[in-house]
Image (cartoon, rainbow, N blue to C red):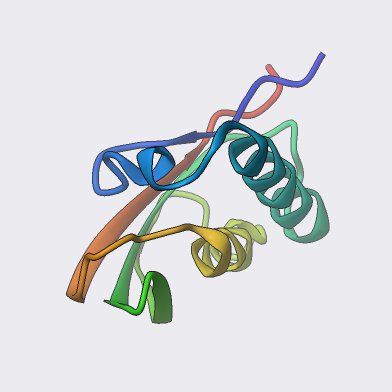
Amino acid sequence: MKRPLFLVAGIVGAFSFVGQASAGNLQSQIQDCLTKHANTSQSAAIMLECTAADGKLSACKVVESNAPKKGFEAAAICVAQVLPMGGKTGTIRVPVRFPGEG
């Protein structure tokens, strides 16, 4: 059974901007990003720096990674593209953690 993905501090309250059905769809999109770009059995922690505007993130770049060149950076950027940001604006740091399927 797959363990859920965890998006930690910096995304606080992101799910409060979406309804229950949307949250399930978001989880599916996040899983798709991970499956497409990285090995789901491995874990990783990535720190992105992005621009938040109009409820979305853009211009994301990796500023820290504990799993370089293993696809997790691309997976984290893919995840950032689907995260709802509500009214947040400006440059923000977005920590993304992939726990692996241990």
